[in-house]
Image 1 (cartoon, rainbow, N blue to C red):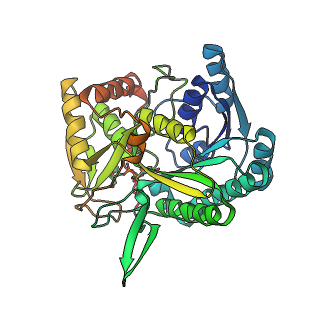
Image 2: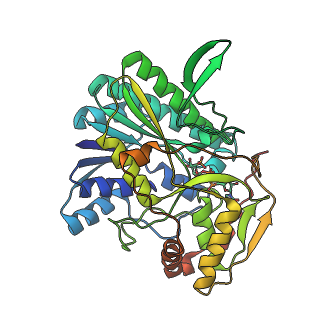
Length: 382
Ligand code: USQ
């Protein structure tokens, strides 16, 4: 298939590009390096340096003989976005091109505006470009489990059947996000759902939980092919942060009571999920939603797991609860469905001591680059 990957420089975009290229697909990646520049601006550089997209594509070609084409530009700009779609005419587009950090989106007005304008502007352009240039193209959109929030009822896979005053209807599952970033993903879903109904687009919206890990089948231990690995407060996600903190001898930063519970997945499973979605496109006029995670953990569960795996390798891992900078429930019910991707054939890579040991070892090789000042930066929700 001809597959266009938007946000192809990012934590998930580049590994997806290599994975799909390795499976014989024709790949073009587009990115404007927004993530890199926001990391620089906020002093949130990743653990190890990552070559730019063009250099990574060259390195990948030298290693495998497989071509990954690169287009650099801003997808929230219609001229650039339209040009990429018109030239490549993708059969599937995987849309990762969003500012992905909750904390960044809550820093100040400017950061909130960047998040809103980039995320909504890009999704809007994707919808119009597909309509204009390739109306059969399958849009695979990365949403987030955070769209649902933490309601006191079971979370269904995208939809909820409601009986009300003797009548029945099917609606998007109620959504109430915990940051502006997560709220932009709700808005994306609403935009897509509107144009699916109006224009008969075919869309898969993947409600993904926090992802961990850095190595994939394609990167192996070659750091020039690995994705960004952020461990800072703004762009780092919880498990990746805990692993770096364990290596640095910094007490694991559990926010508040630590009962915050989410659905997690290994980066390798993100690639499998996206590929399974691409290979089984929905019908035109269908918005298909999958909950994309493999295991549910609380923050306390993760901290204990990293502590145990770290101690097996000789690290003296301490855990410390600190005042929660976010507004979120610290103890809550959490029971989300996630059968759709398993039914398509997903074989999860679960979080074992071995997986954590592999992550700890990669981080340990870069231990001299850990900057402990990045662990806590004081971004507050209130
Ligand atoms: N947390 C801590 N200590 C830390 C960092 C985080 O206790 O040092 C807690 C947070 O308060 C939160 C949970 O861990 O309750 C998850 O936080 P996170 O920063 O790992 O993830 P989140 O902000 O929810 O966002 C991440 C990605 C985002 C993706 C989302 C999936 O950055 O792009 O959409 O995970 S989900 O969480 O399911 O919405």
